[in-house]
Length: 45
Image (cartoon, rainbow, N blue to C red; front, side, top):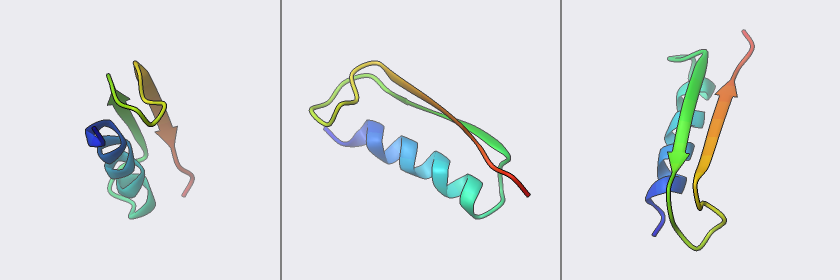
């Protein structure tokens, strides 16, 4: 159920710790507003 949110959280974590400048998180199903959600994130240095 929460696998999509975990992927999005992991992508955000990589930006936060500096290992990535841009990431993509994808959730395909779940009860927490994650139906077919694609989340593109970027950070500033």
